[in-house]
Structure formats: C-alpha cells, structure tokens
Length: 347
Image (cartoon, rainbow, N blue to C red; front, side, top):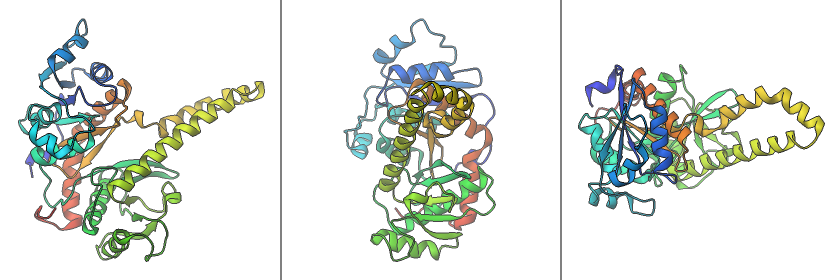
C-alpha cells in the first residue's frame, strides 16, 4: 500500500478530471472544472486539445491545466478491452496522472466500467481487497445508510460481499463516526433462506464473518436505518440507487407542482420553502457530485453520467475534501483491522 495514502494531503490539492467523460461532456465538464478551480484546488483537464481548448478561450485558467489525450472510451465500448487497447484515452491518461504523482486523484462522469478497469490496471487494489466497490451514502430517515456496491461489480461471489461489508463498516466508522456499524444484506425477504444462490450463500458468509451482521434488508427498509451498511452486488446496487434517485426527483417535482396548484397551496408552499430546500439538498445527488471507488490505492471519484457543471464542481470539491481529511488512508487502515487480511490475493 502506498504510504502517503494513510495521511492527509497538504494544500493545494491537484485532481485530474476526465474532460470528455459523461453525457454532457465536454461543455458541462469543463465548466464544472472552471467553477471549482481555485488556489487550493488545481484541476488537470484530460482531453483532446482540439475539443477542450476552445472551451477555455477567454476564461480564467490560472488553476486549470490541459493534459492531452488522444481518444475517448464510450459507454458502448467493452471497458476492459478499451482500457487495454486505448492507451491514449482520457480515462487511461487520467488514471496514469495519479500513478505518476502528477495528480492526487481522478474524477470522471464517463464509463464506470472503464474507470474501474483503469483503476485496477494502473492504480491497483489496496492491500487485502479482493474487489473494490462504489460506495454511496443514502439519506436514511435517522442518518446516512452506506450502500455498496453501487455499480463496480455486476457479478459477485459471497466472499466479495463480505469484503464490501468490511469496506463499508470501515467507512462508516472512520467517516461517519459510527462506533459499531451494523451490516445488512439487501435481499427480497428477511429470512435467511430467501433470495437467489448468491444471497443465501452471502448471508451465511456474512453471519460467520465477525462483522456486526443484522441479517437481510428488504428494499422498502433501505432508508429505515435497520442497518448502517447495506451490501449487495453491483448490478442490484446500481438499480436500487437509480430507482431511489428517480423516486426522489419525481417526489420533489410533484411537491413543487402541488405547491403551485392553488392560492392556498402557494401560501403553504412559501411557509414550507426553507424546509423543502433542505429536503432537496439531502436528496439531490448533484449536491455531493460523486462517490468513491473504495478499495484502490488512490482517490477515484465516479460521477453520475448526466452530471451538470454544478455536480462536477461539487465532485471535485468532494474529492479534495477527502484528501485533506486523509479519508482513504484511514479507511484502508480500518479495513485491514476489521478484515484481518494481509494480502490482496483473490479476484
């Protein structure tokens, strides 16, 4: 494990940003970089010069630097094959800036699969980690609920979910201050015999893991804080996350329409506006911008594919804050303590 991962990072922070990754690239990505760039946050914009340079014309680029790349990995490309063959792609070049010490982390709204593959090939797994996982903090009714994997590993084995439980418990303890995080398994019923083969085998493995395993968590209880950490495979986790995002967006839109439906409703809406702003902030994924790929030897922040400039700017600030607090190193150390692993063998 890299020694520097265990300590906080002094100012200023330098982050690489995939300028051509995402549904709204490059315009919104570059605009987000310009919003976030500051004396204490320098941004390496990784992209093809002929695409990125026109967007920087006439702008203040004092804290932004272009790092040239030659190609782009699309969401329709096979991630592993593309990362291996397109060495000049923005994802590969961005990951290499971390390995070479030119940046302290890499941020992208592009292909999640390509980001995970590049992180594994170049930045490498942290000690003892079988599979890295995308972690997200959901807005539980009584505080955050950590869920992983949110999309890095579509196919998993029971031991991978145990590893996710240890990573999630380490994150919950170090970052969220939970002294004894309770770990649950996302499943279709509370009983141990419920679910597919993976769920049933993972239930037994988690029960024997030494983690504070509280059993299965149904989808309807995901935000009810029956567990502090909820583990699942990346396919199920990504579906659950996007369903929650869609429900949140729909709920906020319906509340807005209802508040404008009559004079009385408008008066009530004015009184509720401050509370609704706080509710929107807690439910809107653009407010934090991105999430970590936990379990690799460097900061990798994965953003929503449809990220706006506001989300990209927040993702950069989110990553910089993690580095300044030494989050990843502390999580790595806590993971090693919880899991008792000393090597990264296994896949």
